[in-house]
Image 1 (spheres, rainbow, N blue to C red):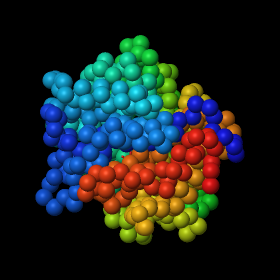
Image 2 (spheres, rainbow, N blue to C red):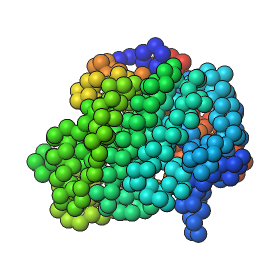
Image 3 (cartoon, rainbow, N blue to C red):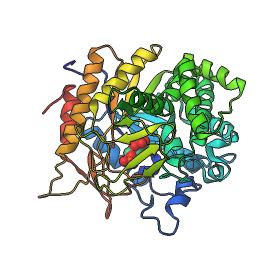
Length: 470
Ligand code: BG6
């Protein structure tokens, strides 16, 4: 394992517009899908005020600066910039992001800007969401406006955050809108459409001769067979194909490899359905694959796969009561617990080895990759005050093990250039609300005050020394 992180390594903190900004009705912002979803009768929480980043971004960036955090992942709210998702630009939205980006730069906290972090304009969601290919063009138009407005200063752009989560959570697990379950055909189609939107936006950016870099953020959950049996290993390969490989191929090979397509077709045959593509999609993929500057890798966990012949079943743990999750997909496999691997209260296996393996896998299978940023990693935990302090030692242990995995991969030649802890401050969790905290800084939601957790002091020391500290 390398001892030190390389010079220039970014020790960042991650956020996303919808999870931190609040102010969902201020200054001309239009509605996104989550506004409608989180304000339905019976909803347990909503995004006002979230972490009030819309008003408190200067405080948060000052904290980042003071704690030696030299990068921040932010995302842009599409409907703050284009209230109807298209057409009329909202000057207040542009002004807000201009001020935010300028403040990041002033504080020495480099902004890494994601164009889309789940918050599709409501109108487009209601009109077919990412199954409707018209949305691809709308996204590229929105991207162009952002590149023109902020591209002189933003040097790291990601097109999308976690296309797989949009597909899986919305159409398989049912815990994101539109809450559909087991719609495997739709999930695969959405992945493809998002890859086309990514490729077109990336190609556009590259044609604009702007000074920055552009990539995409994927959630690369590890997939591990629970036994060496061929059936369990095949379940692992199928889950990996639909969750990871299909989209990595599009981004880095510029096509779907024959092996990938045979796994995807097997899943479609068992569930019914057909992937619809257009010939030009593959021209777009091929151009983008030659130009992509970096991969943002979100990694929290790995899944242990067992062969599964039964029907699909899902129970989402959205409370933090350990041992309540179930996820079995027809034609793919069952995600089962591994008694040797600890889990978080939300049943996410804590498996840093999976992060190391995913990093090595990128280097092996996609040797044309240029750089990787760990764009999210962190531990959801029920933090609280004790004697005026927030002792989040389990989070420190979790992050330590993942940073060790990164150092090992770096030692073996994988080009990892930065780490953005999820999250900078406590944020709204999409399906868990405010009781699942991730931040380095505790947010008291009653008054929006920030308090450094033990992990904030610890992270500062690591960033200052560029090496792990106890
Ligand atoms: C990632 C997302 O999937 O995981 C974040 O990019 C999200 O937006 C994070 O908050 C943690 O998920 P959760 O459900 O624990 O909040």
